[in-house]
Image (cartoon, rainbow, N blue to C red; front, side):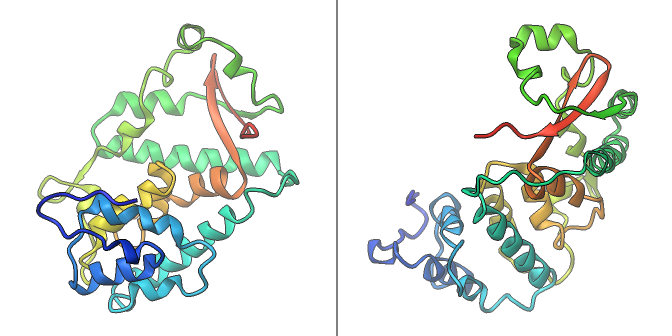
Length: 241
């Protein structure tokens, strides 16, 4: 886990088996670890019944109770990763979740001034398919040639909007949030290298008020995904890893 930068404290090796202590030392100001050095220890919290102790001292700050509840829900989902039983899926419900997510992206595109992105996303009918691998059997060139927008458009760009005084939206935290929000943002992204998961977990701290639950419910709770092919958006189960 440990990465040490010259201006930061080094995590003592005898702390490596105690990730709660590492986070507590950072939160209390006892230590000032480089973010890259300590944030990965969040991945050690699943299965630890007392992991919330890591946040003693900031547990009553704005948004923390909701954050910890969402984080526990994510840990519960990860605990089911080895269960081979396919989850029962309602295709219409998955289509509805995808449409909710697209509605959020459309609003974000408007906020970021990208009207073309909003228009391109709105034109796609959303349908269910039981063949999740069909699209991925195509080469990358074939995917691009077979699909116009938005496969050539990075959907993450919808989130590049600014709120108040030209601050990036993820940096606009509510009053009373803990002073470790920026570190929590990096740590929650590092859980799965997933910005959608980060937005879901961090939503109780930020001010934008957009619906970020639908993507989480689609991709993490129900293990589904969407992709674009031709003139449709297809929703399906995630391929078995």
